[in-house]
Length: 118
Image 1 (cartoon, rainbow, N blue to C red):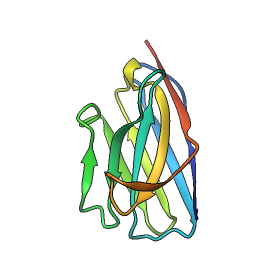
Image 2 (cartoon, rainbow, N blue to C red; image 1 turned 60 degrees about the horizontal axis):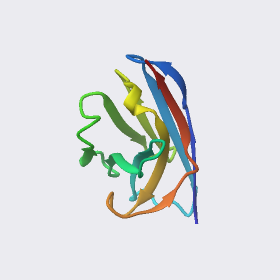
Image 3 (spheres, rainbow, N blue to C red; image 1 turned 135 degrees about the horizontal axis):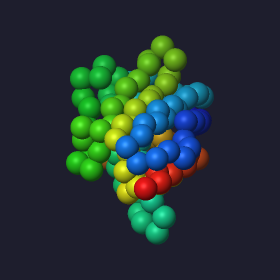
Image 4 (tube, rainbow, N blue to C red; image 1 turned 180 degrees about the horizontal axis):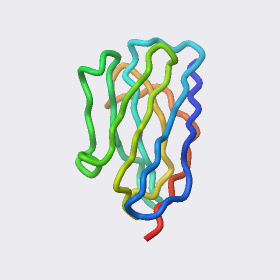
């Protein structure tokens, strides 16, 4: 099993920034793709961003391109999401995930809440 713990969520005004972190432990393979998804109130979970081990493959949802940046530290088994120019529609619970493919993640964290006020 892989354990994922997110941190860094909170309340921020529109236009502000937050940095989410996720620590992986357990039977974690550094070759896993690491990523983030989010679920807004009353909506289905949606993909946000993913990154492979080398960082040579990075994929963003269109809604966050140019505002969010995903990165990872393989030595610490960490993945980060730098969120800039936040909008009220970015309000959601953000989940860290890992797996062999960003379209088929195997393990999920419990999430961290991001609230963007207008």
